Length: 243
Image 1 (cartoon, rainbow, N blue to C red):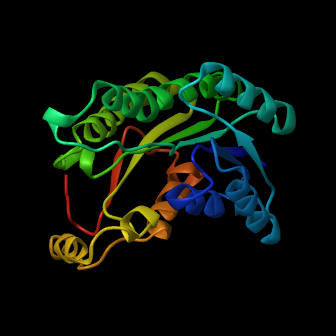
Image 2: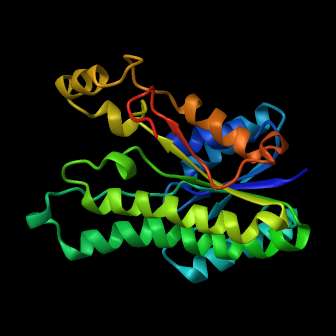
């Protein structure tokens, strides 16, 4: 059985992705600070008949990444499917956006995805099979007030994925993005009701998405069924943005 690593897989969208991939892969739930939550995800996967484990991985630290991948290789042989889901936000309008907040978001969301992909690709090239899936965002396509750093990181991920898709197409390695819209999660649950109503009014389907909407899309791109799909960005947003 092939192995999938989900960074930021202990909660939110990442948790949903890990649970869905647990139906078809050995799943490694990557976490940076919430080990207990990661273990809960593993427990759910195992109860459903799957195989899973956790690994601590800080995508901003090369040593942490190397340690995590080495542990996965010892246990499972390597990472066949990499889902780059780990990400952060540090919002503010431009005049108040601190340079550290800009750098932290770019380093985690964009550079972190570069680092893990660079490490994962070695095994994929040897085995002549691989799937890399990046979690982008509707904000990377449309922009959003107070999120210049986040939008820039998510837009750049799309450009990186297309470049890598070209580089590794002949190696049977696909590279794609999933770009969620506004999804029901811990983050959106804290949004004021008036804001939720406004967002919903802008979505043709008239509702927020679910984690399952995203995880189903990731599962497809990770499977053999998507072997001829690469360099694509699939928008999961109820029609709020169409490319």
